[in-house]
Structure formats: structure tokens, C-alpha cells
Length: 108
Image (spheres, one colour):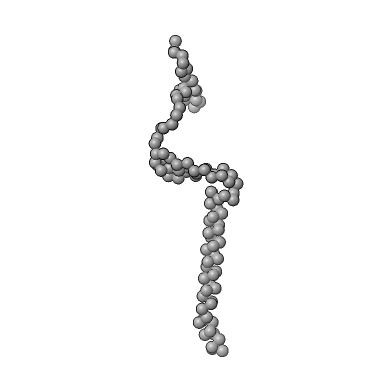
């Protein structure tokens, strides 16, 4: 009977069975991590992710349903098209008052 016990200790297939179990656990952990990713294409959630906020290489990733859009910052601050439309004032009680400007008319 002593020879049967020694065969189990020397059998190389037993160690490979343990390795298969370890790899199955790793695969399950990776699948869970992928499923919890907010940009997962299989979820119907709408998600906005901002990478490197406030830096010149900032990126905004927007997931709307199954469509994913990526916007990269040009690094310039305050650029764009537009014109001054008026002035906003904050009152003492916290309300905001907007006073539009008349571009074509002079103040009388």
C-alpha cells in the first residue's frame, strides 16, 4: 500500500488541476471587472467620463446608449465664437437678474 500513496505525491497532473482552478478564479474576476466598467457597451446607461480634468490634455467621453463619443481638449482656454449678450446680477436674496444688452441702440 505504500506505493499507492507515493504515486499520488509524484503525479504531475494533480498540480495542473490546481492551476486550472486558479485560472478559473482569475477569469471570473476579470469578467466581473469588465461587467462593472461604466463604459460597458452592454449596459443601457448614459455615462459621462472626464479624464485629466482641468489639464491641457483633458478628454470627455460620453456614452449615450450604445454610441460612444470622445472629445479632446485643444489646450486653449476661452476660445470660441460668441458675443456678449448681457449682464447677470445676483441679488441679496440669492435670485439672479439678467439684463440684456441692446447692441444696435445707444443708451438715452
